[in-house]
Image (cartoon, rainbow, N blue to C red; front, side):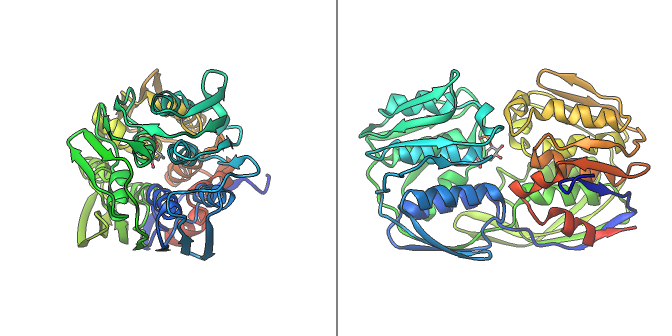
Length: 429
Ligand code: S3P
């Protein structure tokens, strides 16, 4: 066994209280906007994941000064104007960093090179290159649109743009670029995606107009620094919520959790499966809904995830699929082709690991069908270098017969470095 591997033993339940580190999507956005705002942005409960550290690293290379003390971070904004970097910007594993930062860099008067790890270097960037070039930036990429990117910013002009794929990263990238453009940038999305970009811009004082699936922003607006406590990451909580759902005797409390309606479809899905969930202490902070969840396990029925649900649940599908065999009616996922271009091909990764555990799985180009009522056995699995696959199969392993080894489990550092330790503390054996 290598030091990057982990062994998960079966459990009998999961109980206790867990507070999650700050949401990854919001941490990226607040850090980037803090870097171009006027004044010092002070954030509490900043994401502990390596992805957000990549964003901070890039900001430092762009002349943004920040100081971090655990979850607290103070970012000195540079009032719109970043400094030309003197080495490539390392985005690590982070699609959010490369795509959203490109929107800001498109409006700067210098050239930067954005690089990433092996996984990021395989991911499609044409989806930001095309619209940012229409706005006036120049972007060279490898292989029909893969990183590294060489991006030369310019004086941008606003565009009206229909997103060909539902992607909050692309929407946010274009909204950020829109801040630097002459005129009004209008974006229409095929399905509404998470709205943290819009809410973050408004929190920093920008005016953003929002109508159903259309959002627009006027160029030339200046941002003001904010103080914020970042709500707990619901996509990280998803692993514990699903694990609690696996055991009828589970009792889990999750305070300070992000409950933004564009991110909380998982709760509807779990309630539909038979998990009992109540919400309390609801409050709003910078437009983001936050609250405390009480979760009680049940016996899981089945779920069909398709259309808009697939886009809304894109980060939670791996763990919903991983608990599929333990439901009575199974889990079916369609319209989720985007999963194939995430940190790993998540349709293939889930199917491979479930089969290694002895499950029957049907794989489609755009999803998976996992029949219910199956018994799984422990196996030696691979994370495929993908944080959400590592954590999803730690959950599947809890109800398997025998131990499960996950190779490359350290991939969890990307979004939730403390995951395995925290999960161990909640389990009943
Ligand atoms: C994110 C959007 C989603 C998601 C990713 C974070 C964001 O990606 O999978 O983990 O913060 O906007 P896409 O925009 O590629 O769908």
